[in-house]
Length: 284
Image 1 (tube, rainbow, N blue to C red):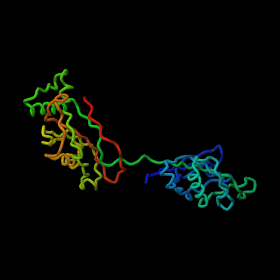
Image 2: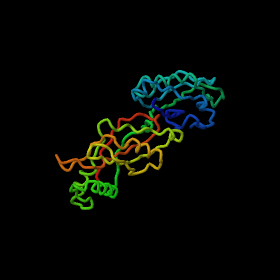
Image 3: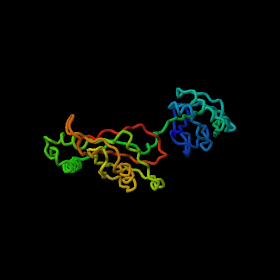
Image 4: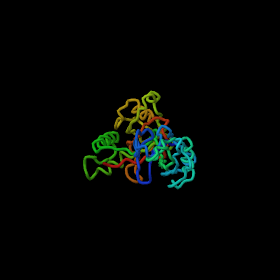
């Protein structure tokens, strides 16, 4: 269920508005005995209807009531609707439990009935962070050059431009850094059991070297999350021998022993699901 945030606003009259949370200690009327005020200790949180949460319904409702001489609150009406009947009705349902400090006639000192108003805002909070999921990989030019040179060394029989040559950088990138995991071969990296208690989170970037035969030769860390367990979890998902798709030396050219790259955000498994897909790494 989506968490919710509710803010309470109390009004002593149509023009005097005090905004605050339910545990506020004062209202606009303060200790003026001639003015009515709510007993804040009687305020709870109205229910947020489950169907309203599912439908994403939010809004501000203003309720007018009568503060009776005996401190009871009744005769509630909706003065400003949220636009959603379910939310308005939930706010009205809380009125029966409210109490007030009645107004007093300044001439006689007798308690008298008087009008009060309150406003309640229904607002859905942002969803919690998604669990472990792929994310856009960020790589510096220096990191890319290092991988390009390793791939060039692994392909001595192929003419691969040097990444340090500005004119050959793009070609070197496409020939050495565009390997891909094989279809269905890359398992979703498991969130480490040892990270659960501390709710460890972080983003890990790794590269895997894909051989010409379509198998992973080795993998290496590009950027650490700062948590060794999370780093290792991504590397463990790229074992040697796994299926991969190497880059090629130009359109229709031979396969190249080349690097593929991945980045994952690790988060506790009890976080909300995500549909965010991995994006190809931008060239620095």
